[in-house]
Length: 111
Image (cartoon, rainbow, N blue to C red; front, side, top):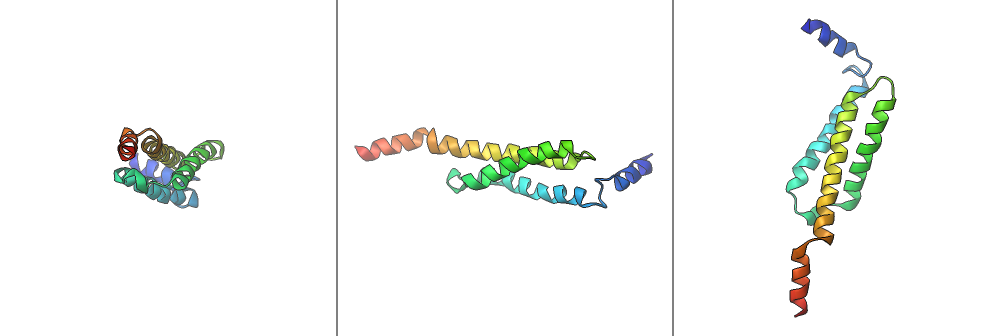
């Protein structure tokens, strides 16, 4: 039974013998790096980079569901990619525009 499932996976149109498997698999590296960047201070987060990561994830997650065969590896990595990009953007926006620390520092410097 396990060998038949492995054989089906191996011979799948989006299986390991095709680029349709390996491109999304390596794309996980970008998502993992973005998760590792959660520890970065908000000053080091790049708006353009995170917008591109979020948009790429959104676009490719939709695309992965309309192509034949459906590529679940591409879908899952794209959902994670868009999620991490949107989270990083929310962190940056909260700190840049809604942070109380910055308002207090500005008020103290004016006194």
